[in-house]
Length: 425
Image (cartoon, rainbow, N blue to C red):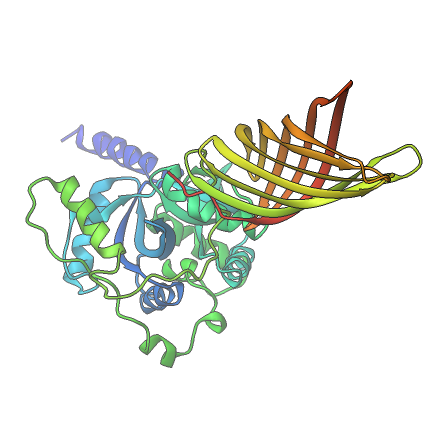
């Protein structure tokens, strides 16, 4: 027919336009979904499981999370923009015996990750991943497209929200590796493998497989004997609940509490600094002291403090003795304290109460009386060590037969003590 050849040419042109140009990097995709393969009790066990599949065409990576104060290491597979693709991978993993069963709850949202750095070559990104792993941070690579050119981004984690990411954020901060939590975007595994192979050809390297982009160099992998001794991956039991989300939550709770694995949780990564909630209870005891100037000398004083507190309120107990500048002193009081503000480890308190103050002069003349007291207290907690700085004002009137003496006593002091961490509410 006369129109057959023009239609054939037009159709061929359309198909050609739909294909990416040779050497052009495909566009980035939001990598929102992964498949949960297992939750392990230790990083070593998770690494062993990951390395068992380092020749798999799908990348495996590790994400540490904290559940009910215990740390677990999720081993996840694949990174997809479409949830249906993740479901297909899960079914394939079950068919190949990598997973024992399929569950809708195991298709996890992992759209957020910490960006540790971006590199122009795969070799540089491999080095960065190895450096992070040496510090106990399980990192991995994602290939991205920047201005049509490939780039290798090193990431850590894969989370649904900021709450899930809190533990890893603390671990990164403690290691001096602050990183922003951002949306994970990059090339899909098939496109990433193509770009990685092209990049290797331009640098006279052997093209790596797609999985090798998420595995460390061979010299960093544990010996085969260690891999064979690795704890088997945790697999979860089937559920018969009709509410899929509720059933999935129960499955994960059982799995990550070690019921299915029979493993006790461990913490290879040190936990982040204690979370000090204003609704928690804490108790501190310490020693404080200072000095105040006299006419020709200073009056030095020191003593102990106790400070139990619940939420924004506390009870402050204070006892000190002093000597110098021509007199001895003794003071003690109890007060109600109020937390005015808390900024990380720094707490700002005000207090007011009632106590006793006594002075003994050179001639052993002693004056003492009950007095009101008020002041402020700064606390700075590092672990279970609390550094304190306080200011107290006591004021009253000595009443003796035929004489009345008004007085004010000011005490500025510094100290250190032991404090428990506030329990998170």
